[in-house]
Image 1 (tube, rainbow, N blue to C red):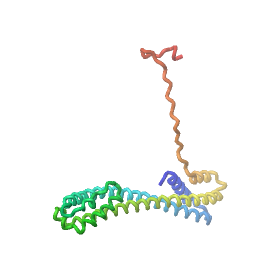
Image 2 (cartoon, one colour):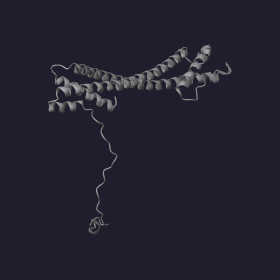
Image 3 (tube, rainbow, N blue to C red):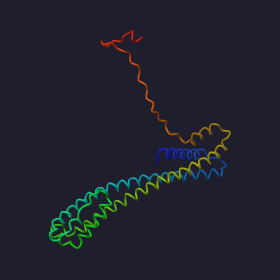
Image 4 (tube, one colour):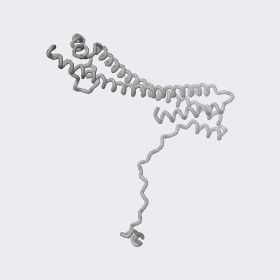
Length: 237
């Protein structure tokens, strides 16, 4: 949740507290409806903020997991590629098929891994005879699946984060409209009470962003000194 949305949420919370602590009797039906909307928006904003944070964490976790899995995947594929070079004599022409991609991109890694698994399947016995475990194809497929799952986690987390962000913006606008409606009704009721109107104005106000300035503070003037370190009276005057 960005600073602007946080300021709107803080305003809604103050509006909610003011109405609770200063009940209006008899009740104003339209105020009741608008106040209920404010409360609903507060809950929705807090939920959306949680989703936003959770989505960001899920996406970042997917990125980290994908990087780790890709590293392990490449190391395993290097072993298969090295073995394929040794088997070139018995299976002429297989070396290019098992060569790792020059590109470091993840799509290239996935495409090459799929090709290597497909090419190694009918030659499984030869690879096992060369020292790879009998389960090497299963292990390669498991790494490929783990890599794809990590990619999905990254994308799903990103979507959740975007949805949370969009929900915050949409619900915040609804909340501001509800608070504006409350403003009219509360001011009507307390029109002859300046103290309550002042308190309400404080509650209703959306804080402004702090103003930043790039102006630097001028340094204090330094009196000229002589070579001996004392102030020269002539220059000082």
